[in-house]
Image (cartoon, rainbow, N blue to C red):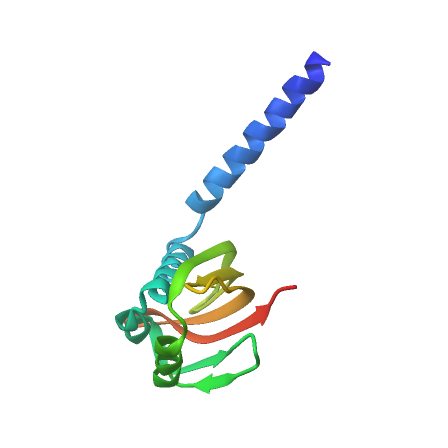
Length: 145
């Protein structure tokens, strides 16, 4: 019995150790995109138009969880500024991969508006690295069940 307790403690210790070092093992490019994703979550909460202007390419493409297709940063900003006021927004299960000058971020996004309506989506965001750093060029969301 004692051996099982020690084994369980070892498994928990290793699991926590691995999750703590996962963020540490990200490359600089992965970390940069991860930071942009976190800022995006905050931008949704705060309606931060400056964030969208800084990190979205002019030709940004967005496909919403409802299948709405938007073309261009200005169209996305217009839509984002008209959304219901956000009470909470969180990201989870993020994964960032880099392929040369292209990055892909996937994860889960949950938003709750001030009326209490909660929507959770899975997302794929595609980034391109240019002389001015990483910019998101496309995003697609899918509702979760």
